[in-house]
Each structure stands twice: as C-alpha cells, then as structure tokens.
Image (cartoon, rainbow over all chains, first blue to last red; front, side, top):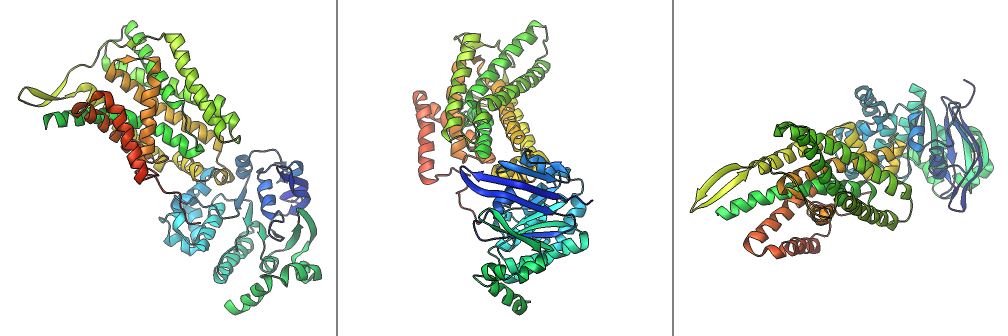
Length: 252
Length: 304
C-alpha cells in the first residue's frame, strides 16, 4: 500500500541520438493528483509516452503497481490499468463518439460498457448528446472530453492526461479541470497530469514536479510550488499563466 | 438488348471475383499503408489449393458436388489464410518501421517467389479442372439468342453476396472490426488502449487471404483452368479496382471490382477483346484525373 502506484527511477529516453529524458525520478501514489509542468519541448509528452514504452526507456526502470513494465509492449502496459489521454487528443476521427468509447472499453471486452458509458456521460453531458456523431467533426473541447472519457472507459487505476487544456476556451478548460478534480475527489482516481498551464495544474494537484530539458529540477507539494519564487518567475508570471489566474476569477 | 443483358451478367460475375480480391489490397493498404503486391499471387496459390483439393476429393470418391464444394471451400480458406499469415510474418513484419519502400520491395520478392514456387512445384502448363456444375437457366430467348444465367454464375454471385454481408458485419459491428478500424485510423492510439496492433495486422492479412481464397475457388470453377501466372493479371485488375473505388475503402473495392468487370466484358463484346485490358486501365486513368482519391476514397483532409 505504501509503494507508489507508478514509479520512475533514472529513466532516460532518446529520439534517435537526441536525449529527451535524462535520469527522471518520479512517483505517483494511489489516490493522488500529481502534475508535471514545464515549457514546450521540455519532454513532458515524451515522459507520458515512455511510461507506455513508446519510445522505450534506454536506461532506468519504470514500475507500475509493483511490476516492472520497462520492457513491456505498449498494449500490455495499457492492459495493466494505465490509461492515457494523449497529446493532441487522438480521437479516432472516422468513428462515432460511441465507437471511440467502445474502443476505450475494448480491453474488458465491453463487459462494463453500459454502466461506464453512463458514468462518462454524467461527467461530460456533452458527449451524451453526440454519441452518434463522428468524432472528427467535433470541436476541440468535445474531442478532449471524448479523449478523457475514452481513457476512463478502460477503468484505469492511473489516469494520465497530457495537456487537457491545450487550445481550449477558458470556460471549457474550467469544465474539464473540474471534471478531473471530481474524479479524484469522488472516486479516488489517481491522476497524472501534464500541463503547460502551471497555475491551474498546481491548484488542482497534490504534488508537482517541474521538467526542464528532460530533467526534473524541482519536486514538492503543489502548494509549495505555487509559492516558489523560481516557479513564479518562470511559469506563473511570464507568458500565459497570469492571464489564466486572472481569468479564473473573472470567467467563473 | 439481349447481348447487353448477357454481358451484364457476365460482367457482374467477373466483377465479383475482382471485388473479393480487391478487398485484400484495400484493407492491407488501409492498415499499414502498403500495397501488398504479393496478394495476387496469394490468390493464385489459392486456385491451386482449390484444384488439388478438388482432385483429391474426387480420388477419394466423393461425388456430391455440393459436399465437395463445401469441403474445398473450407480447405482452401484455411490453407490460404496460413499463406497470408506467413507472408506477413516473414516478409513484412520484420521490415515494419523500416523505410517506406522496404516492404514494397519485399512484397515484389514474395510475388516472384510464389509464382516461381508454383511453377516449379506444379509445372508451367495450364491445369484443368474436370467440368462440373454445368448448365444454367435460360432467362429469355429471342431470334435464336438465348440469355443464360449459368449455375456457376449464380453460385459466384450468391457466395460473393453472402461473404460480403458477413464481412461487412465483421468490420462494422464486432470488436475485432472496431479494433481493425482503430488501427487503420491511429495505430499508436490503438496500442495505448490495449489493442495488440501486430495481431490486428496479422488478422487483416488473414482476412484478405480468406477472401482471396474464395475468389480463387470461384475463379477456378468459372474458368476451369489455372496457371502459375494467374496471380499477375487478375491481381493487377483487382488492385486497379481498389484504386478506382478509392484505396482504403471497403465498399469502394467492391464497386471498383464490379466496374472493372463490367468494362472488361462490355468492351470485349462490343469493341475488341484484345483491348479489354486497355479499356479497363484507361477508365482508371480517367477517373483518377478527375477524382484523385477514387470513387469512394476520402480526400486526406481532416479537422484536427
């Protein structure tokens, strides 16, 4: 019970000869929301994909629920109970919303499809109205909801979300973040959240880490990171972060 | 009018066979983006498997045509599926992730291997099947010209229709079909959802081979003669059908097959039989000029 659900030790990954991750250590405990923040190109999405073995870690170990998954094939890792809403959402564009959700439930052979569909539709009522629409014709926000819903359909023990706020209107971002928080609060879902939107992510998470050029430079309780002067300077006061923090109050 | 109806029947029969082969091209292209040039030769191998099983059954003294047909159908589908599976395993899978042309070259190699293998193992001469299932229905007769629908043609169209219905159900309504379509749209994402992509690709080859096997058996019954070189021309025609219909589209493959079959027979009947292939390929060229992605193909634009 005390061992972390997901644990990375000294993980390095490369694209060709370019190092994308250098000796990353990271733990996600059961029931937590852990966020990984960092600038564009820091290696956040690579880290998500490396957990799934694509690209494969060239050194270090990745363990999930006590099992070493470093060398497992991607589909076998997914079947252990990790689900991902990946960068770019990657819904199946020429399938209906319902079929996309069925794909999420595929690893259970559709056994819990009915009840899980209802859960996902309660979480994202928008999806319920569009079950028969082709996923490729939906808006970005709806596709993001579908990507998260699809991940949930696999009944994961760990839900991994890659930039769920990217490119979405503030109101939609708010909807999605409150859904994430509800999942954790009400169902005890363990969530690993990768975000550029550092303010929102740290507000939501229990713990956070900062990734810079493939290295974890800082880790700690999310609250402490929010107050950390170096983080304030790098991620909260420059670029888009302050608008987000102002926007939250205004658009609520 | 009489000639027209007769040619329509003949064309649809031929087109059914092309359509069945074309599905194998289009499915494999859809899932791994590669033209499986060996598919025509897998079809040719299946005609020989069917021929040998027919002769074997006759030697065993099975005289019921229906029973023989059923047994041969099963044996041919099973053995051809094994060929399709092995070809993918040996010649294509090791090259996945390699540069784009590598599997294409490998496919041409497999194609040459299969036709040479059959040539050496079975001889270069045409092999004939004792005629069976002769006769047919005379639909109508006028001025001494009888429009007939032979039992073979009925069998071919019936088998093709049933098979296509079952196949459509498999792809659209079953978990395997969904996984197959998911891999076609985004292989990496399918893997993230726990789908074994390699297995799905294997099964796609197997499925294509099974349909080609049925086409092979029907082809053997229809023409009564097969040769080691029969992989090439029917293979190219079926590939043409797949491109004409829009490669990657399953209904497109069937419609493309029927169109190619019809063009070929009508051209042979009304113009010249020597130029039937020229006619078929010219239509392809014309269609592709105006509809580059084929009749039912989708333009590669998607909302992201």
